[in-house]
Length: 68
Image 1 (tube, rainbow, N blue to C red):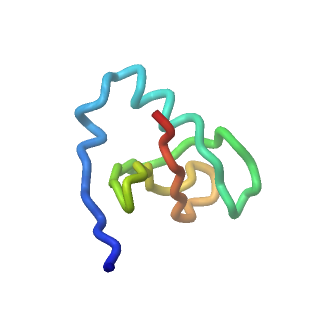
Image 2 (image 1 turned 45 degrees about the horizontal axis):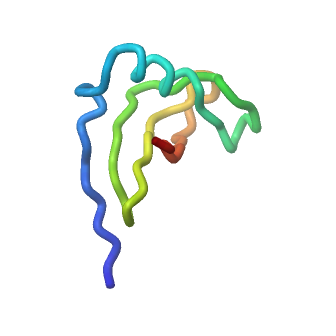
């Protein structure tokens, strides 16, 4: 079975949720938490929801699972 990526609308989340999610991230490159994310997008893959974008500090692409 092929993985199916479903784009979701991050912009439709409540403002406080968007702010919290964008600030509480993990960067595998910086090895630090809560550096922030630039250009956030949201998608679903295999029943899990992810936030993806670019680390505010180093600029590398990052992806975090959103646990609701």
